[in-house]
Length: 164
Image (tube, rainbow, N blue to C red; front, top):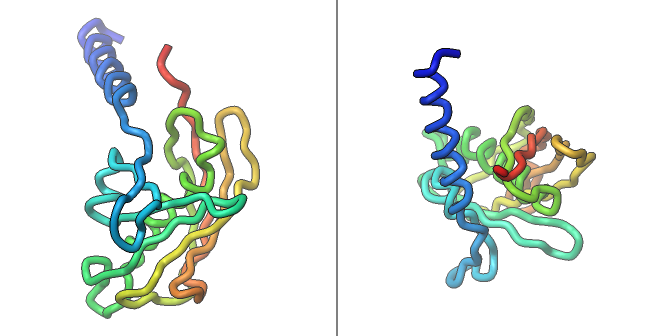
């Protein structure tokens, strides 16, 4: 690798480290239907654009939720498949929260649509960690809309270690 490219990689790595060092932890919603539920403000797409999506530990499991609204719907009047898949990806990390010390990213994801949620339904994801190793976590779950199965999903998370 030439010195110019090494310099660029070094600058990107420094920016990456600075970004994650200042990345906020999940915070609790203080008002509305999801008061007391957590969200990740640093995940702008999942919170501001596609969501907002929330999660909370209930008993021994993490549950994710959002209320569908007009912005989540496709032209056919049902929740857009991309929105459901984005929510499922969010839920992967909520379900695996206790196994992620620092940060991670999705390396594999599969899903099957089971029904088409409508506007103003409570969309919920529950699941389980199938296996959590040193660097990889395998997760599966199901999304329901007002308790009716809407999407099943599975995914693999690659854990990152904090910079040293």
